[in-house]
Amino acid sequence: MKADLSLIEIVSSASLLVQLVMLVLLAASFVSWMMIFRKRAVLGEAKRAADRFEDLFWSGQDLATIYKQIDERPHESNGMEKIFHSGFREFARLKQQSNVEPMAVLEGAARAMRVTLSRELYELELHLSFLATVGSTSPYVGLFGTVWGIMNSFRALGSANQATLAMVAPGIAEALIATAMGLFAAIPAVIAYNRFANDAEHLTNRYDTFVEEFSTILQRQAHV
Image (cartoon, rainbow, N blue to C red; front, side, top):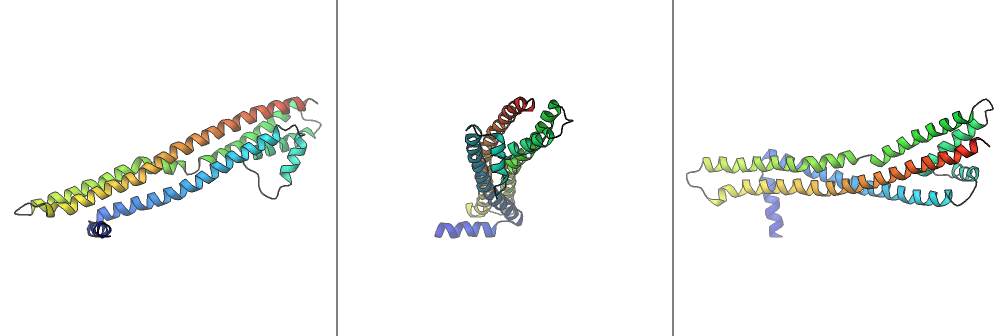
């Protein structure tokens, strides 16, 4: 309990600028953890949804049946499922028009899938730039607080007739706390960013592969 009180005292007695640095780092860390938990849930659900849809898609069912099952669901589809839904809907719409060439049908379906793919990739990469920013800038923000705290210590030494450890200890302590808070904010953000960026890239590759495979299947059906 005594150590906790001393830490609180150090923070409360720190200079206003160092307190502001600590507050910024604390807020950045709090927001980062919120985004980490949210992004983990989003990417996890996207991977599970992709696994479920691939099992359904390659189960041998008719494409029109799969499309109808997705279209009748009360919840909105996402990820690979949404890419399939938009592509097959455009394919069926264009194929019903007798004056549209098979190549134009395929191109229309491909464009619809690419538009949906871009939207899904945006959702996968949402907030990753914030984590990258926190991970790269927090140590420097903490370092700024460190430099300011050390400057306070030197100013205290300069105005004293006799230098003692008690005179420089508060400034050094607040400087080290600012450094620690910068690392506390940066390390989880960097780890999470690397992990989530890798997961998003893996899902992107799966989506791209599905678009190519589905386009090949539609190509065969466009000439039927």
